[in-house]
Length: 507
Picture 1: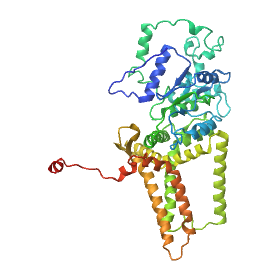
Picture 2: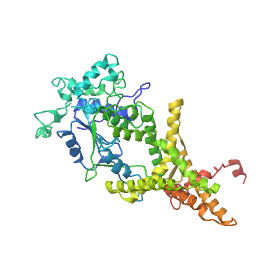
Picture 3: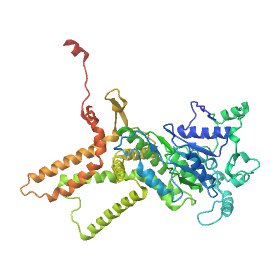
Picture 4: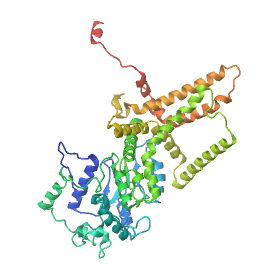
């Protein structure tokens, strides 16, 4: 049954954007079918393998799968340039990081291509939960009852499936929980004609999407998709893991879902800006992994903490990008004296990181080229979107100021692919490229015109400057534009032309 939902919106009511729309759909589906599983797909994705539904539900309907809150499928994209200069496939994240998280409590929720258990979205505890220290759930409930006498009940109690009468709330139980029917609907159930929805059911479905339905409720706080972040999917998955639910990463032989992704540099950077802004919001909120409950495993907390702090690494990346140029301008290498201890330490770090990269590539099955594309865009994003997201987050938290860094748009033609959106996101990468190029010229010039040329002195700075430029090559290529078009970088330095109609008429 296909149901189109257009929820009520009125001035003065916060409709909570995408997360609010998802919660409205959850409530409507509860009235219409109350199915135990919910699949979420973004509007730019479609089903590529219908058997993926079965594979995802098999995890949850397995004998030990009743503690799985959601099953996340990898995102696969179409229409991307074969060179994939901007790492649009995001292979490293989906084929390395997410698979690694599958060995702890499960992958984080990335939104699209995710199959949820309705009970987990409602804020219930997983069944047969055991406390991290080894105590049973019964002992945990007893301690919680003692705490409830001195603490607010809404802050200490979790919803538990055991607290409800199965006879009165039998429609809320997943189909797999029925002892008499472990495989869901009986054979032939789908061939029976459906009853026409009565007026009462329609009225109830309309009432649950009214703009004031969520007032004074837990929707958006502990029930449904969580509000207050542009990355609501990540926060929702975090809340489930905090309650003790697990997740599963399901990689099918044939892609489960496929979608589209930004193909030009500026749109890709704005996508990364949105993700990193959400991470900053999470870090400065009550959903910070440092405040996670004891139900979440330690390594899972580290994974969520990494998702919250990675934009701050941009500070060190920017410093590292300017250090080689600084050494060429000053004529002094970054490290004045290299002792045996410092060389041993440096060699150990290089070997460790190189070994880790080789093991990741071999274990995940991604190609060396894909790994290199990810490394390149990691530096591009770190020197552009991540630093901007950090500034936005700090201004919002400290002063309550919300700013946008999209300045203007300029079109180089009627083709949408040729449109160039001038944004401050690309200013810092351009500065880094120009400074390192100038530094290389200065280093060579100083050596050539010196009385006694010593080519060994600028060698280290030139090598590391070329290493920085190699990482920023996709950014430079994207700025130069396609062949036959005006290079994008020209727009940054060209003064606008002003035409005087009177002067034209006089000639």
